[in-house]
Image (cartoon, rainbow, N blue to C red; front, side, top):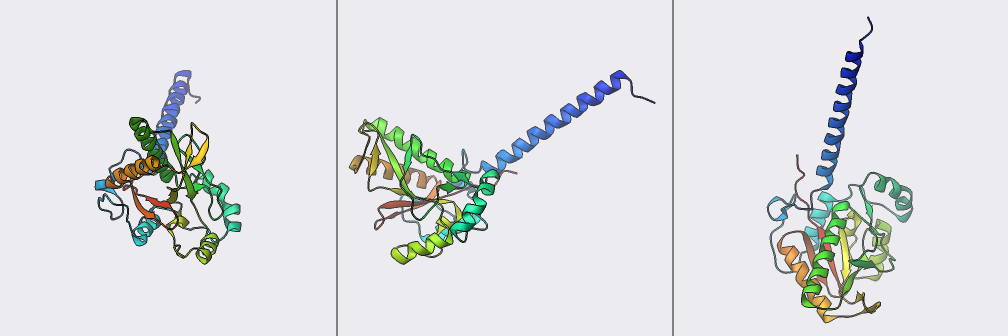
Length: 239
């Protein structure tokens, strides 16, 4: 017995509704998977141990604890592995390419690749937005901060260790959770120049202290490298 016209319409409508529900559910799950930084309360719901602090002196072991918890489960052994696998990591939204924008520049990279986990990119943009706002409030020149290091492979990390006594073989940079921001100089947007700036250093430092108090990240001021070494902090995933 063939279904009548009304039955076909009913089945079609039910199918459309089920597809729509599936799409909403999938989108919601995807958002929950990647939205463990933006708008979250890291002070109370960080998924790894952290306490509030108004100083930028977090030790390497706590950076590693968070990096291992939230970053790449299998970091890249060498540049060859990175080059062969990075497209797949990006396709799956495990890593995101970091591009220069109105908040920051990326210096010429010799020992790292311009990729981070999505939440670390969100963190960078939040730092940049607060930095720009604070500069404007103080009526200072408009600056962009400069990124000096991002994702590293074991190969590049080992090379860095051979020439930098401040580096360690096991770095949070291996996990895509960690970034170095220079305080040595900044990009002056108005003057289109790279320059040192006391006002910019103080403003960036105050923004980082404010966000560290909110447990948005871990940070340490590395004096030998003239940079802030920063690792993103995530919340327990929404269920």
